[in-house]
Amino acid sequence: MAPTKSLKPKRKLAPVGQTFLSVSSPRSNRKWVERKSCGIRILQVPALAKIPWLIHGFSTKPGGVSNQDSQKVLNLGFTEWDTKDNVLENRHLFQSALGASGLKLTPLKQIHSDVIHVFDTPPTETCQGDASITNRSGLLLSVQTADCVPILLVDPKKRAIAAVHAGWRGTLARIVVKAIGQMQMQFKSNPGDILAAIGPSIGGCCYEVGTEVATQFLSQFADAPQWFDEFRTGDEPNPVQWLNMMPPGHQPPPKNVLLDLRKANRAQLLGAGLPAANIFVSDLCTACRRDLLFSYRKEGPQSGRLMSVIGIRPQG
Ligand SMILES: [Zn+2]
Image 1 (cartoon, helix red, strand yellow):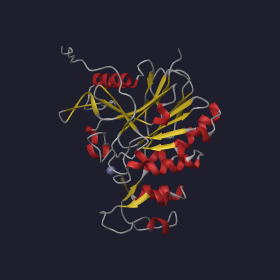
Image 2 (image 1 turned 90 degrees about the vertical axis):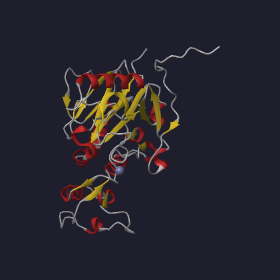
Image 3 (image 1 turned 120 degrees about the horizontal axis):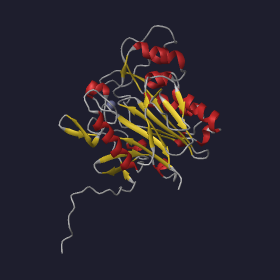
Image 4 (image 1 turned 30 degrees about the horizontal axis):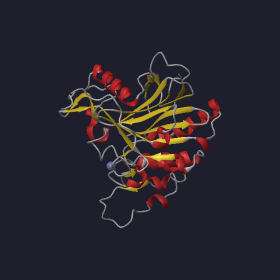
């Protein structure tokens, strides 16, 4: 007796626990897992996933209803090449896959700033800014990225959360440090309790920036030289140490360099008082993994948007 086959996709969510394959160092990615549902693949950090009242996730490209290069993709941001209906349907699918359908998604109009919103209730219109924090249940804080660094923060003790968008401008403006400062001010969070998940973004392997960007970082951060690498072929034995030799504000580097924004944000989190063991960094590079992620650098205006979300489950 053969069981009846159903063509309908299963609504049941796959259990968390499958290790996500990494292209580079599997070490830092060991702490990340993938959750699959209806063709949608969501990245999560087990340390956050096990907090019973918390919902979090980083979207990826596969699945969804948008068409890109004759592929179905989960574009979660409004773009010129995609329809509003597709994006809204994708957001609906993403929230369902996460078990977050009951939460109110609160997207921001991101402007590469250090503007942080404190949400007590869902905003009636989209706010301009690049981070939001709350300690209220029922809100799904979010940031959209396609190379920039998404950072989710949770204070398990004070039950407070944040979603942060950090491109090079936001990183230079220390937006993640300021978000933690807001959590301290608003919710009396202790940085030593906060967990941080730094999601997939463009890696130090691919993020080439001009000398003017490097100079700004060098003038602001003592450890900035560690975040840069010379743009090279990979054959050289050692990265040239020009950044270490150069006093801030003097002689700009000779050419473009590679910036590791994840390293920069991790350093800022450590500086803000988070223990190293509380910081989880995805090493997936948006530009290297176009099969899995969206990259504005690689795809230009035809790129989709990833979404990173965090929320407190409604009670009862
Ligand atoms: Zn890369």
